[in-house]
Image (tube, rainbow, N blue to C red; front, side, top):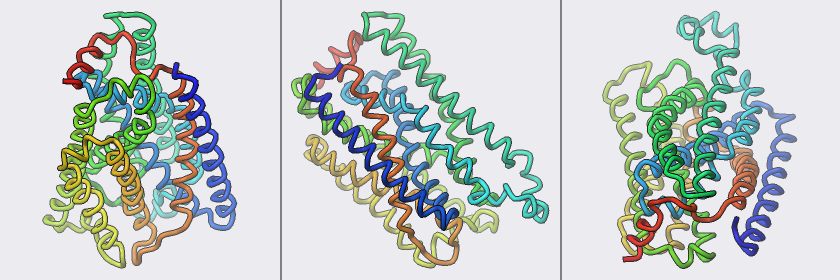
Length: 391
């Protein structure tokens, strides 16, 4: 368990997050009475943003279990806490299910009947199957996270080679399961907003964004905890440097995937594919796209080239906060032009819904974080990893 001072800080933050999140969602819900379509659009942006954090936590955590790098031990507890919030995340997904008629054109029988392409895709894109898949995704993610959590708890209770081996053995197949489920979830929740369009790289862009969101978020949590015992005595500049390099790697991977998708589709100049980019490159949305190129790649890339910045947790925290903000902009750019195709429009419910969903999810995260020791106990790789960072 965390010490009393840290627990008090986390509990205060938990209640503040709950109050802010619930208040923001209540305001959105009230406004949604008069504008339900806008409410569900803004809520979808918020859900896509914040669902990426626990999913990214799950992926990064499994990578850590496989490679056991020193960087991972500093953020392992925040990563584990993020993965134990899938029940709350599942509840936060419920409004999306109620908003299907407002979000997805393939849910309207009259539109499907007049569109041969939608008729062809109706076997997959139909409401009952959509609901079943969404339930299946959360069941799989919850089961995977629960399996990892139980093995980690067993390792905390006593030194157990079997528990450590289970973490390793589950993580390899678990990453494959993560990749498959996130691929289909990104198609269902985001790509099917425009069912006539498709991209084989789309889910990869989503996965890189999720990993980046998770690393940015847990870096903020690390900055909050690093002055507490035992992190204050064990965290080193080398550990922070490794974490900064991880963030840099996913900044570059996201940019590579996103630009590859754009380049291939733009060079192909096919009507069915390029139609997704056309509204996002005119009517004001092109400036948002340029802001993403600068803020999601160029700025963090140049900043993270600095060894000094990566060794200072305060600077890493500032950069991480920026990355979460720009991840929100990316979700707005992905979702909103599907509805406002001719001109840029940014609604006040977009950031308010993000604050609401984020506040509720962060409260659930903090509730989990305070239940476990800040560092994992009895992991055979922990002493060596910490000693390596102190050299």
